[in-house]
Image (tube, rainbow, N blue to C red; front, side, top):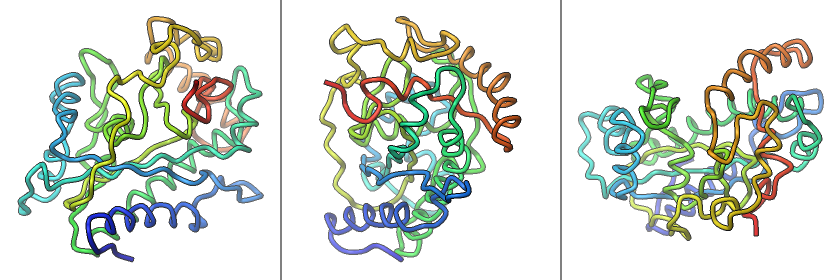
Length: 287
């Protein structure tokens, strides 16, 4: 299935392309006995390749962080594309109410549903990335999913520690889909309990207006000096008033949770996300 038409038609077509696949694909599954859905209805946004935020991200995160132009040129060296001709298509995959309800009760380890969404749901997210790219290519629009590129890799940021060539959360922020919280998760209109993905494509679609200027606008701790509920949800004190300790967080994932998931749920993988449920920003922009 391709996309075509005017700029607004193209935006609607890409939006429907993503929504239809999430809602209709049997691969959107937790792979449990009930074949429960991994993700609820998605949210989609667009940003321009000439948006100054992309250069700001590169300046702040590190020179290894791609702009849309850089990853497009790496993927399609023979296709000319000005930054203003490129769009980043970004989407939010919210956790289902059933998964959030189960996970909200946990205090030390992730629930099975949440873990399955992190492992098998992210595999579906990769299928979605590939599906969007294939459909856009079929329509004559060169496209690439940056995190699926063989050139994508983990990197070390002098300022932020663990990083990579492309951040899905920053792409969503640029595309008007949310702002960052104290835990460094992205608070979206559908909440922080979500995963996100994106594709860079040569296409003319109106960018989504950003209803914020501050990258912490939706976080009550930063915007109003109150809340901090995510601090108390973290079982290893990796979130404090100073921010998020990525090293402590990852150590807990790999050294504790990975063993727990294998011994209790019977598959390989890890997740946590306790700071994303049982908080005011779990399912909405908090007020």
